[in-house]
Image (tube, rainbow, N blue to C red; front, side, top):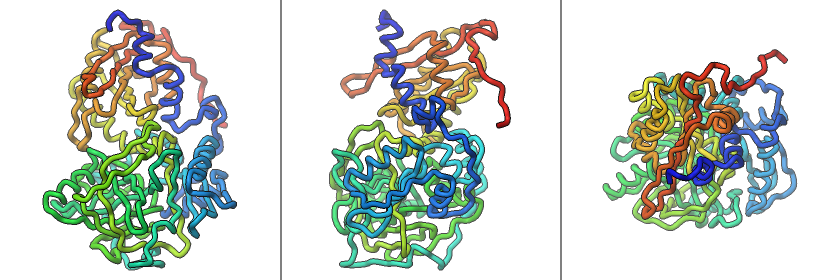
Length: 494
């Protein structure tokens, strides 16, 4: 392989110009039109309320909400409409959904700017700012506050009246195995520690009172399932649909398992999250929620779920435990939240909330071995395998980028129960610190202008591992300051 050209290496890694544009550029939540200069320029006022209905009103006031007033079929049509309006930078409110009296809302968090707005931030916002907010919240948590005032208890459905088919649960993609809850936040307790855990999981509706709850390997719920199986116990479980944006962000994150995620959500919000007791299970969940499903899960009883359009735009499936629903609770006029799955901007951007933790875990490891590594950013998009970009304050030798790449791919992780890097990372890009690694355009520019070498790493094909590649996109040692310097305009006030 060493005799192949760099262009062949790039082709093997799947890093053609079009893939970089589709993967890294959209890593900033930009459509191709926005990347070409057609992005939004107006500034929105900060959103400071709590529930998602307030955020929906906020987006409406700022011209970022499309209202679909005609009846929409949740089978395929809803997904197609969400995809089209994501290209236009708008969230979508489906006022009339076939087969349900409940409207649906999707596309709320389709880029980092939106996530920042939902958390009350109006300035520059991305993975770095998100991680800093979480770091502060972990150090200064605000515990949940128990309350009896609970909007989601306005309607409580039990027993034979439970019917999941009356909720506007969509089948988003052509070959999905059925309707999926894609924005559901699972709430449970760890049977070994009694600590609360929250997370966002795919959930397939299989009957009027049955859903499958998938937990991906490496997630806290995956370990909770194992603990329940070991004890031979069922798991009290609640699903939040349409929760406070701060709760949603905490649920997607990779906060250490011994830290109360709702207390961190309180820190993100600036006040304790109000929680109330469930009606049929021994749990307390946030009151600023549109819909709550209650029930029990038997981790031993598993059914194959899927196919499901997952990350990378490919279909996945696996054996998932069944939740038997004991109550459907909701506000009098609830909204059903949907996240467009697959390779949509919203699915990828919300997953990068998790990625900012794993990226920082890798960064800490690199800094312990290379004191000139300045920063690292993990892009959770652009195919089934992801891209990590690391920056150097200076390059000490021509071999150093390769040594850094090797360390990245050998990283096993531990702090956040992360999986081995080899399971999700395909390419590592090393750049100089004059490149903003959080700006996809600058990373693309560095690869296209400064590419000095490629380091293919071929894994065991018997395990279906693919070729992984490192890219040295740094300037030569001793290069004059003006060599390959990117042109930039002076900032001005408009």
